[in-house]
Image 1 (cartoon, helix red, strand yellow):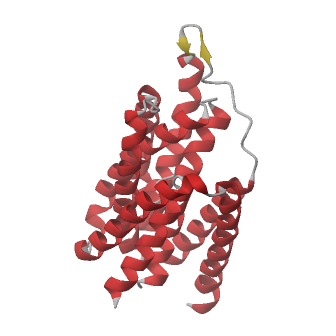
Image 2: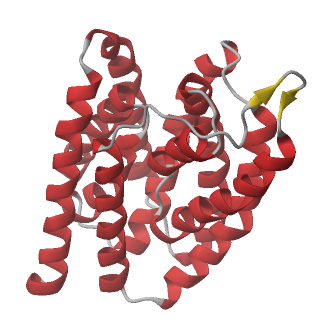
Length: 257
């Protein structure tokens, strides 16, 4: 029964990832906690594996199309590396109820971001005749990377819902490059976050394999079909779904546990 549920939930997460370019990963932890019955300490490392492997698969075509700004990805990931370990250490000190409420807050932030118009772009990393203005870009990339890394360590999210708008709105990276660069950063962040969480508890590798495998297959299929769908409308409906799940997490944590 657990395997069937993991297959179904993994496929749903993967489909959302493939259709929305990463936003679906915000549901991985709630799916593992409420759908399969894991503690959040068990769910976080599995979520990191699922998100990281799905991002790695999604990054391959972006790399082939040269839509990854590698130097910016390295700066972001390097700033996030110590933050993931800090987030993991902080998470071990907090009770599960606090982590769940914090995660619900992150979900609300993600949903709000999905509903906002993100057409305008920032100027910090705007290209000049000689390339990216790295002196201005680095000063904003480091704190943004640290913040995303902290959330990755705390809650087991890839942070794509924050990385893409940070790259576009704060740094001025154009959307196609921002998506490809975000996937590369997610792979690095989730890898370091997983290392930080490995000692926290045992990982059910069979369950992880089923969940991640279904997510990857669902992501590939949805990514192929997503070009024919109105992703803007889908993203808005998904944002409302995230609001609903966040509300359920808060009610369950405060009133039902």
